[in-house]
Length: 195
Image (tube, rainbow, N blue to C red; front, top):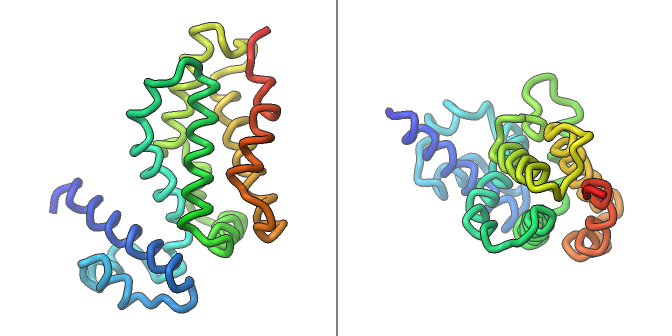
């Protein structure tokens, strides 16, 4: 099986699982339903995942998939700050519309207690590659301050997004994550701008 085929199989399982988690809840979703919805086999499922709990850490895959979809639209923005705000707005809209609060909270919980891979911090993710590119372009154009490294700016942005999601989870989703971020993220990122 080719590398692309393996990635596609794993991606199908992850996508099907998150769709089912959203539609019927994590607890109510079985491995058998995930296998059926993904059009794969039980053997394939267990090749990639120890069990259903192992899928909780893959929410970052769904985020990265969303960023891949959004990349072509970035060229229409005049500033790199606008690109960051657009990515955040679209990601948070996706979270609100297709990922339950409970699952976002579970993701944070698993990432806090895991001894293995911390998917949210994996610097090789599409998320971090795209953020580094935008921050690099922001510094090269003189829009973003250059007394911090690209990695520092990227880390600050990711930290800010996680803080917004974490607070939303703590508040039990009593407000719109997307709207709250639209109102506050520009202020939180104002320190990026070169003066």
